[in-house]
Length: 385
Ligand SMILES: *Cc1c(COP(=O)(O)O)cnc(C)c1O
Image 1: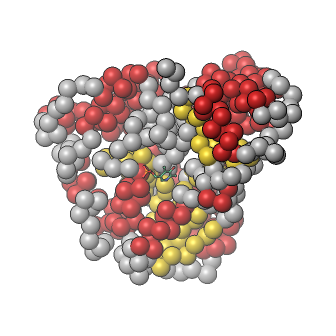
Image 2: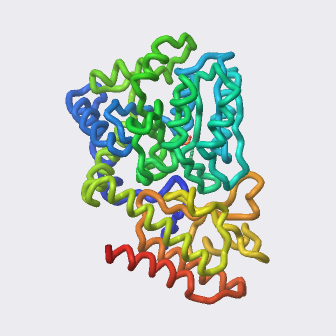
Image 3: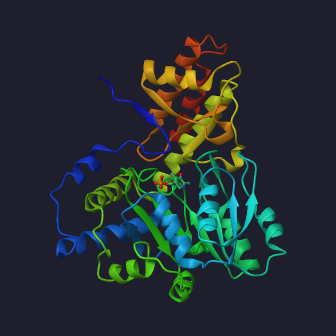
């Protein structure tokens, strides 16, 4: 009867307005109406990326756009740096290795960010790097890498392109692609973008286009030059995910209704603080430091004596509260609280309250109500500003 309270890092809940928009009658992707929809919608998405460049749309999951960014920019045998701080950073490592790039891996323990100093040091002995790959928001650990600072280092020390995976935070975290000097920025529809899975979005700097134009590595469906060529006509090379583009247009309406993208970003920041303060009040550990904490997902350490799987199963069964488990070697030690996209402070209060109910069911000793109170306090203080 009751629908799940989906507090995952994606897929995430879909607003009613977006759902209804996606039910619109189908149209031809070679029609004037489509060209209008495509141009208007991609223009409206630009503030989310912080770019004046075109937004390209690939009918795919986020991974295909990561692969497109890699295969269009680098050829086999060339040297790249991949910054990895968790499971999704490792996606870039795998893609680059599959394509035969010479990968220099800058790896950090799970739960830590990569700092500008670390990258600067790592790049020092390297002289022939074609691209540096980084994850903006590491979904497995709830880390937001300092992309602006990392971009500065890449520009100062190399001629490399800086290619960034923004899949689990674009739409909820600030991004200034042009200003920061990010060369390719990629995201997917089903995380903070309030859409179902199936649409990847990416934007590409002028510097990258020069590299892409000269790159001889073959690609067909993911050939970005062909996406650019068709985008000039307001279309995509093949059949696009038309319904998801209807939905994307509705997402832009919702962001406008909220007061513009900076308000959407501020809401995510607030939810992050609510979640973190509530866990601290419950003496429950967090995997990351506040300084690098993600605005879209929080990694919470399972309290001593609780079995992660059993606890999450119980929350879902009894309270319909659906948190995501941990990944990799942290699977049994933590769980993840998604607060991205169509999620509001009221949803955070609800989830924290149900989490506390679950803790009581497991006879976990804590100061009942302290988590909700702390989250509420953060929320109320934000209302005063
Ligand atoms: C989810 C995710 C991906 C993969 O996206 P898919 O749509 O599953 O292909 C890549 N990077 C990050 C950071 C993610 O969170």
